[in-house]
Every structure is written in C-alpha cells, then in structure tokens.
Length: 240
Image (tube, rainbow, N blue to C red):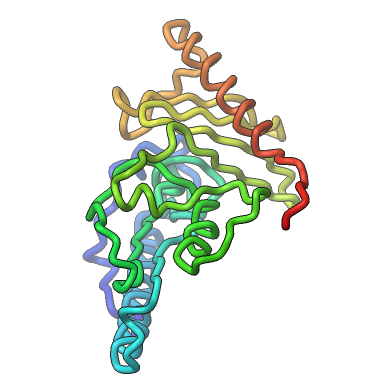
C-alpha cells in the first residue's frame, strides 16, 4: 500500500542532486525517483502509525499525562550531492525533526517554536526532568525544558559524530549558527577538513576550509571541536 502510494513520475529531484561531483556515477534519475517515491511512502507510514498511537493515548485518557518526543537519529541525503543514507554532515542529514509535547498537567508556559540548536543527548535528561527524576552528574546532555519555557537559550555549538568500523570511517563535526566544520580521518579518497559558511552559502556548495579568507574561522572551529570533545570526557563521579 505505502510502496505504491506515490508516483515516481511526480517526484521532484533536488537541485543538489545536479550538484553531485560525479554525474556519470551513481543512480540514474529514473532510479532516484523510484527511491524517492518509496521513501515518501515510508514517511507516510510513520505518520499514520504515530497518528494511531496518539488516538490510542486519547482514547485511554493518557494524552494529558504523556510526554511525547518525535525525532530521528539522522536524516536522509536522498541523492543530494550524489549521496544516500547518512555518513555525511550536510544539513540534509544532520538537521532532524524534533517535536516535543510535554504532559499538559505540567502547566508549563511554552515557546511554540524554538529555533536554537540542541543535541540528541539532551533528550534523556529532558525525559528525566519531566519524570521528576534526578539527572546524574555524568549525563552529558541538558534538559530542554528551560529552553522550551523560554528561560534559556540553546547551545552555541553542537557536535555530530559518525563512525563506520566496516568502512573504517571516522568523522567529527561541530556546527554553530553560522559555520559548520567537520574533519574526517584520512581513508582512501576520503578525509580532510570541510568548512561551510552557512550564512553566505546555505546550500553548502563551497568548501572554504582552504580559503585564506577563512583561515581564522577554521582555527576557531577546530578549537571549538577539540574543546567540545575534551569537555565530553566527564569523569565517572559517585552519585548518591
């Protein structure tokens, strides 16, 4: 049913697919349209299942007492730059949905839309916060509840990581509101630094890591990445 819900002939290819570095390699436009149609069908399936869950919560009188978080661990490149799945830090992959409905009996005055940056590691302490549990000092994330209430701002920089042992790929990324820097450990034809100025180049078409005009930005972002990684190495503390 869902696999045939969308016509591949109606699929609109992203302009970033046309920016792929090797036009002669990878799937043809026909195959990509077919993949897109199946992918949209899967998204619709998820929507329908979430809808059934919400209906059941309301029917059982649990809606007001339930914390709901809708998100994903990564996005889908879906042909952008000739890539699929994950394994890259383009916006198509790392900018995932995050929708939170708190328990209505929490009586929070919430900001309807938060555009600040957060990290997925913030979800565990958010759940513990709403559950009334103490957040262990070794937890690296921070509860999103104060941000949702408009009392605090999001993070100035967020970390993304990707490791694939079978492909021997090891990559780290740090993103601020304007810049994105990632470094991949050299392996085969891959590796090295990537730096995007998201304000001047929101579609991420120009890697300015080696641009002399951006050398200080690159140094600053390298320092941010290193500091973020070091600060994530919290010692094991005794928790009472």
